[in-house]
Length: 292
Image (cartoon, rainbow, N blue to C red; front, side):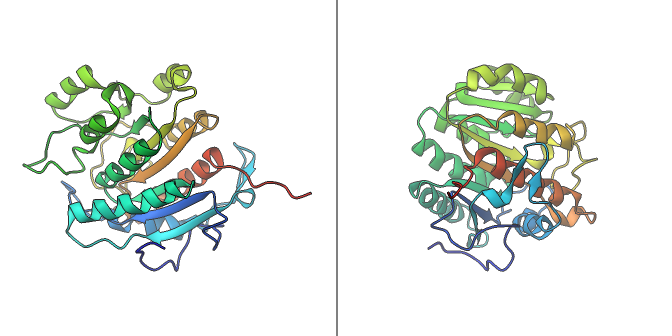
């Protein structure tokens, strides 16, 4: 079906039947353009491995994973060091998931892996609104001369969906030029997550939404396992609340990036990532039809 690596360790409760699943999880283990500390290629497997520690029931949502059908496709086999070909392969996999009328949940990997995901989701859903949760603006034209970088992913996304459809939450790091660009082109909320999201909910109603969530939007006190940690972020509870606030909206895609387990021996960053994936499945997926 896909060009994948070993599926030996799937996300808790995932089905073995791709065809019956409404949601497909897939890992994109790429960290070729990181600007500080590598290691996010290990993120998808870390998320899966700690997921066994989660309950399948979410008391906040009053929903249970057993009522949802989701398939963990494993990690995409990427040619190490080849950025453009890797992005192409990620796009092909996500495109197939969407063509099969399934909801993609993509686990990175560095934030650049979100670009082909957003491209495919935007092609499927015209008028897409992009919700970007991150510590960093990611609006550079290039990083050290390279236009394809985890520091430029949202700049490219603006070209795909239009800056008026890009909403950036929790941003607290970037260049002077990036913030000037944001004031002219995107909807950026510096350092804030919950308050601006609440105000925006009426504007988001009815539109297709893709969520791209960089784990470093969360303060490193809660999520230290990331390559470019930035103090002053939201709490783990606040980022979960953001997911809950969007549960009744038309969310059509979700990606979670930049978990780098080597920098967190407690595994709490991966555990938070696993819980975010669980809550995304329960918030944005369709419950199975009850028989009888």
